[in-house]
Every structure is written in C-alpha cells, then in structure tokens.
Length: 277
Image (tube, rainbow, N blue to C red; front, side, top):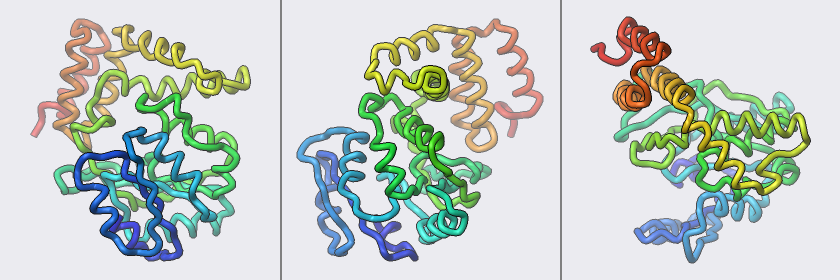
C-alpha cells in the first residue's frame, strides 16, 4: 500500500479488500487515512480471483492495474506505464520485475520477465474482456489466461524496465512447484488453440472436468513431466541455484534413465549450473 500511495503519479484511486484474513491485515488497512483508498473488505475468504473481480467492478478510473499483496512497486511505475501507453497509442502494457527473497534482490534474476500482476490496461479493455474467469481459481493459470485473452484482442506493449518487485516466497502457491504448476503454460496454449480453431474453449464452456483431465494426463506422462522439470530447472539456474537444484532433484525422481535426462544432466554439469560454485 505504501508503494502505491507514494507513486509519482498521484491521481489514483486505491481499491483494496481484506479477504477474510485472521491476522492483523484488516486492522492495518483500516489504519490508513488517505482519502484515495476505497475499502471493500470480504466478511469471509472468497479467493484471489473473485476478490480481484470484485475490485475491478468497483473501479471508476480510466486505467486499471494490479498490485499483489506480497509485492511492491517502484515509485515511477504507474507514471512510466501510463506514459508508454499514451505515447504509443497502446491499450495497455506490462513492465519488468525484480525478484526479492528474504528482503534481498535475487542476483542475476532477469528484469525482462513480465508477469501478469504488472499489467496496466485501459478501462475499455476490462469492459470488453470482463474479469478473470472464476473457473480457473487456484489452477495457477488464471492470470495468464486472462492476459492471453487481452493480448488476442488488444495492443499490449512491454516496458523493458523493472518497476515491480516480486517477493519470491518458497512457501507460496506459485513457488511451491507442485507438479500442477508446470501444466499452466501448455494449458494456456491448448485453450488458445481451441479458441482459434473452434471459437471457444473449455473455460468459456465451463468445462472444469476437461481442464483437470488435461492437466492430469500431462502429469502422468513421465516423458513430458521430466522434460518440463528439466527446462524449469535450467531456466532457474542463473537466477536461483538453490531452487534450480530442488526442481532438478524432482526431475531425477521421475525417470533417471531417460536419454533426455542424461543429456540435460551432462549439460548441467558442463556449464556448472547445478554443482558449480
């Protein structure tokens, strides 16, 4: 909240909701006296997707953006994103991130990675696309699916500057590396393929069972699963060697005799990605 209230672009409204927490969150939020804050607390926990949609529906500004609870923004974030949109006649834009762990910046982490929470869009984009589909709640793909819909219909740019600080919490949902997390990218690709070929997809049809079956089939495919884990491990190797090793160990357990595994294992040793200094 402090990072948003301290933005150099001051003409904002800050919509926030405590999602039925049992700690001091609600009390802390209510302790702010800034007139730009609008509170829409939930009396019970309804989840991230429903809460975000609730706040989107209450927003009155010309541009919408997101600030996740664990993260914070550079004081120039909103100003620079707004300028990029207006100067280039865009419908929205994403910005780069900096990874934070234990309140320290993760060294060598890419600042060119764009995550859904960094999005800023015109209000007309939201009115056209609507909110995030509640069917995808906690599938770890809801934001990416929503962004993919927006990108298909609107001109979304990228500000190649890290203005969003993402706190990497090993115990959080998106960093626990449950096997289901690996299915997010192929699931989004499959849904996009469906829309392109048939004009609709499982989400629009409300077909939760088919989504779960798709994910289950991937996880049960040992060849795909090991490959996905190895790729994830290699992607992490330059920015987070500790996490990279953890994911690599998961890959070993899937099938340590596969040729692909041996090849990737040799590359890892050769490049010093897993057992180097």
